[in-house]
Length: 359
Ligand SMILES: NC(=O)C1=CN([C@@H]2O[C@H](COP(=O)(O)OP(=O)(O)OC[C@H]3O[C@@H](n4cnc5c(N)ncnc54)[C@H](OP(=O)(O)O)[C@@H]3O)[C@@H](O)[C@H]2O)C=CC1
Ligand SMILES: Nc1c(N[C@@H]2O[C@H](COP(=O)(O)O)[C@@H](O)[C@H]2O)[nH]c(=O)[nH]c1=O
Image 1 (cartoon, rainbow, N blue to C red):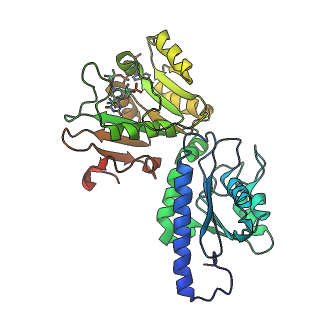
Image 2: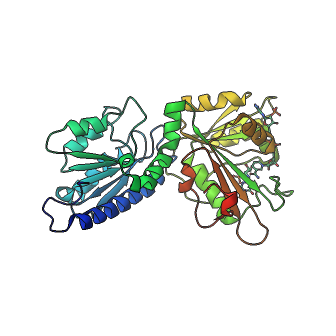
Image 3: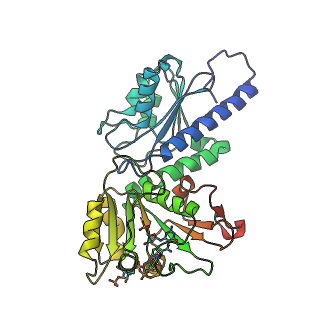
């Protein structure tokens, strides 16, 4: 592995490699954490993080893509490095997604890297988007010895690649399958029921509600059923954690085949910044959401709609939060791949025992 250390650094190869792996690891962890803060704000673009290191492997800047139309993560990180006066020290760029090679709303990141002192570029995932991809090949063709390393070529860094795959999963789903990543969130009480006690909408703990609201913040759309609207008149807003500033209107899709949706609820939601769509056919929802640029959709619905979603297999991961009645709530996750839920869950709610949980 060549990399973050300047040629001629007077340390042994093995020591250099160990330090190098440590620097790459901390850099990717920082880039992933920063990017995950913007899940739900970047769509239809992906969430992407970038970390710039100096030749000793010290982190100089960590940045992320904030929203469509704004600078990409690499371009913003290089911009910050110039603002901070550390651009001349930048040696290595770690990016969770292949740098773009096209002129979209912003110029190609491959060129931003070319016009910088970066010599080594570490890439978490190849870009599944054929329009923007090609940055790896372009960087490799550039003169002056730029090196490009892919995490997929380093088995000892497989967990970082999985993190990058989880971060990209919602975008990759829309691009490759023309449907968003769909997460079902289900809360159940001590006896396994989803139905709240009379006069209440929720029964889980504050920690669980914060997880639910982080998921709302990270997703671009909520799929629900008419039964939930009629029972709860839900707000579906983000209030137990801070929301993204100036977020684009989020979609709520209501499965309602008999036109029972109250106008008053629809008007209230539009007034709070949602777009409301009614669907008579559950099966059409994934492609409809993809057409609206939705990368990640969550389901907040009752047992009627969840049964149908389960029967049709219309989900990618399923978060089941259970109240125990005594002690903290527990959760388990069922997932069909590296799940972006890893960026949502935290210590406030404990996983169920390993044999009952996916991770
Ligand atoms: N604990 C939790 O996590 C949650 C609990 N809840 C609770 O669940 C209860 C409501 O549950 P429920 O009555 O089952 O309501 P749902 O929210 O599950 O909505 C059910 C409706 O979905 C529509 N639907 C079902 N299948 C399809 C399909 N294939 N295509 C299109 N539409 C479809 C039907 O509408 P139609 O009748 O028009 O055919 C059906 O009546 C409430 O008490 C609420 O508090 C709600 C959300 C989360
Ligand atoms: N019961 C239940 C949940 N239920 C979901 O929350 C909705 C109410 O949202 P709001 O109007 O924004 O407070 C409700 O209609 C249903 O979709 N969620 C949870 O995290 N825990 C719970 O115990």
